[in-house]
Length: 432
Image (tube, rainbow, N blue to C red; front, side, top):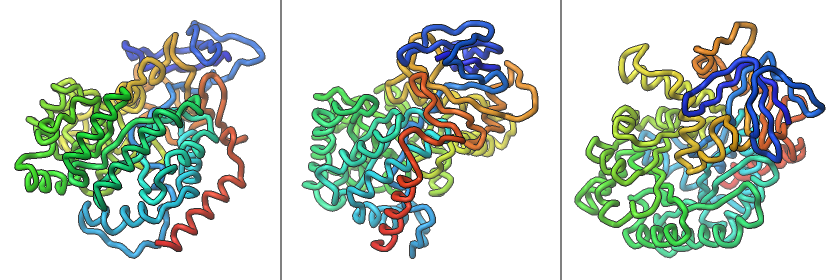
């Protein structure tokens, strides 16, 4: 494939932006980026468009898709009440059919909005064993890249948590081999919904398999309060004493992490998945990303299952961090694009393959029609963050193949598939 780009935002180490170039992809890999345009039967014409790397959503919950619009009889007044009154009921009601179709629908939505790589956390205890295989089946119907895991929790019993760990181990060791673009990892829901024995078992399995563990860390104050009550200390030092950080850790949220805790996370090379829109929606607070970055933590961005438009997620980050500073110039808008590309790729340990447009990486791109205004090299990243939306995506490209455009839709997905997603959602609503 040859991709002719009017403006190419590379997100390489120099954060280089180039005009009037072409990118050559062979066998899915970028082999050249050259000045000028090139012709050929496989040339893609984005000469009047902006090209960015495929977006990377480093923390999502695809199983949240069926709840959009659901007539739920709940009005939570705290994050914990939202978990108890909404999400844990959803978890218990999920079937393998729901797992597969929510993964299919969410994967299609992500490709439509320019996401080519994601990291998901699935929770459906009544689908064990086999729920993660159903998720993988739904994802694999599309050409997207994905890291998937079952969200281990002992909220019902320690035995159920151990079954969740085993679900992840089975997929890592046996299931993922059936797929080219899907891999498994491990996940603990939170510290407060697990026990020390579960934490230690998860670390043992993850380190044996050389896979990361993802955890929701200090998203709400309930995590902090329960940790102090149970262990006499906040979650980060409590987890450190359990040996949790002997594993590679992806910490989602970290909204209530103190400076001391952030320093501990930095000492253990923990990566952070920032979820700004979700944090707004759940009214939990604003993560101290400034202190995180000052301590050298790697930050990526996720939608936490809430917003299928990653451009809106980026703008949420811009808005909350400017507001936090009470300064319209208090946050560099281009930083949000960095988090959504190379930052998230680094969080997932995939920055050798995705997250930027460079020779040797996979041919994953998004082409954007941003309208009639000129696009200047110096301001292009700011223009993307401030103005782009999923409606501006003209193509999503994975491994040099156009896998989405507005005319033909997502490769591998048709109207009957989407009808099935909707029907499964309606059936789930009846059970809730």
